Length: 188
Image (cartoon, rainbow, N blue to C red; front, side, top):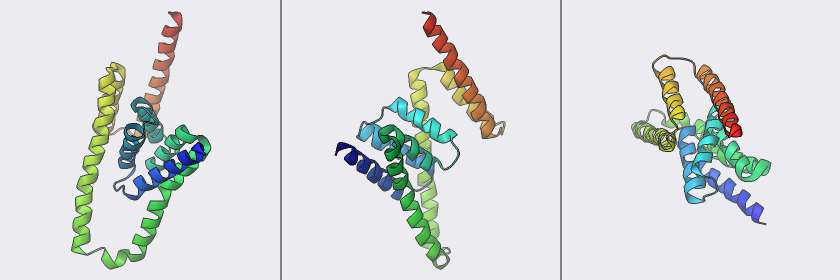
């Protein structure tokens, strides 16, 4: 019975978050963190950062990928189903309704003003996610992780290097760094 409650909680949480999240996957990732790390204490902060990294590096929508990794962590395969269904149902219903009536209200000034306001709010939430993730790395005082974060940003923003290459290089660097750290720990 406890497992059924947990699956229901996963489904209802992701359904609620997805229904009231505007602005894409990074916004829902922030809300998933708030729900499962800070409110329910089912996942710790460091593990959530790892799950977000996995969700970001996987192909597909980050909201769905985030739901998959969190659902798997919390309940295995049934957890994935609950989290993904909860994350996918609201946008599906909302987009279906919007597409049916889009022509009637797309040029209405109130709708245009609402969308402009939502863009500002979404930008603020995305900046909050970036700040929280960066603060986690800097707070750990792991200089290598901070260097990788700054180098990846510089490579993407200033040098306009394709994100796929950045992901591949940082994944390789992370694997080598982990292997070296494990070897060093095994020698002690």
